Length: 201
Image (cartoon, rainbow, N blue to C red; front, side):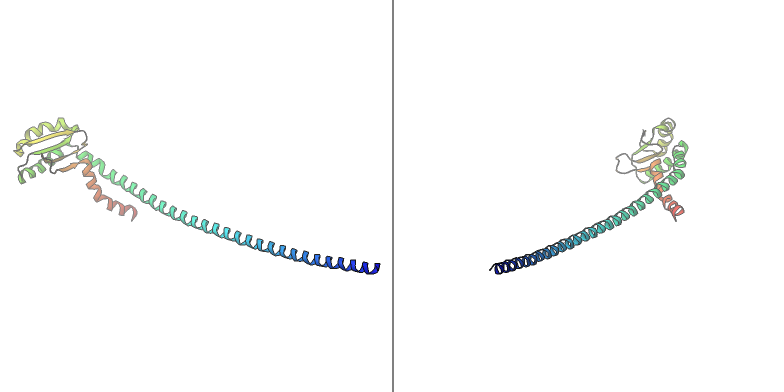
């Protein structure tokens, strides 16, 4: 009887051990499969993050290169314009300034322009001149020019005019401006294309 009891105990023990071992192996296999799945998900996630980071880096590189090209082109254009302005200014500023501040030269031009006005219409004229030339031009205006025109002439001197003059009907409906600034602009308009071609091809 004790043998049978021992056999039964051994059989129950072995069956329980075998079943426990089998269940343990199943649990271990499930745990391994879950771990593999988690690891695979982590690898995919990491690959996605790396791919996204590489795409962002490539986009940033392209944008930076594009911005640098644009900034470089703008800087080059601005530099060319500055060089052009300096050269045109150097060529035109001094000669224009000297000529339009020369009283004799101004007298000739003003007489010619004013005579054209008085010949085409009997308008009363207004003349704006540089304040720096008032002492030299005022006697000529009130004497010689007034006689030559035969009409009324209102002359003003302004510190805002560096050289040259503006002339037109007194009503201000329009005027001709031949100041140093307008003359420089006019000359510069013709010089710029030539200068640009000479400097930059």
